[in-house]
Image (cartoon, rainbow, N blue to C red; front, side, top):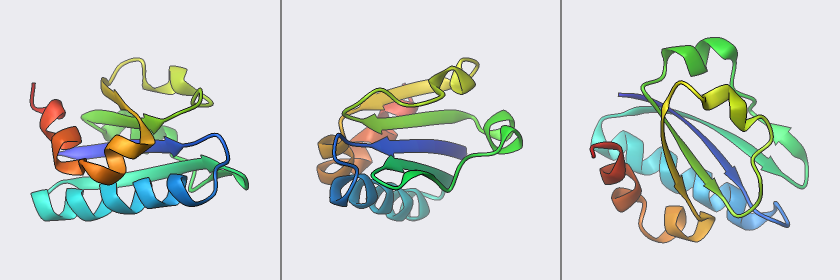
Length: 99
């Protein structure tokens, strides 16, 4: 499955990027394709394109703050989790996409 994701935490330093890395590693392990946008201290990095969002089957929002531009994902199946859950239990996050 093609998946898009956004990770964001209040300070936007370590945990934002740790969550992105865990989601990327787990997606690869489970046979999914994923693109992760990070929203942190440096602003929005690796911004998702409209095409990537349109072609995705689902979105994972791993955030402890409001995700900027969340309306972009209105048409997608959505899983919302904390950054900590994405870091500590990424396989459980992906399992929620199957429900």
